[in-house]
Image (cartoon, rainbow, N blue to C red; front, side, top):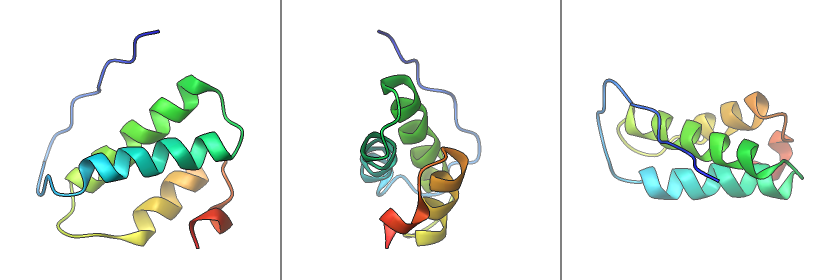
Length: 75
């Protein structure tokens, strides 16, 4: 399998992007999603982290909603 990284415009802060990827991936994985969906969730969350300064829980909740994973697992 190959999962190219989508380009991200408007990068503000790189801190936490890797953590964001892992969080998105695991959130989808623990929700029973397919590997490709897990990768997309990781990429999506990492791209959102890159566009904001500092941590934001609302980003995790948005990704959970977009990937059909229960947002209750983020609390």
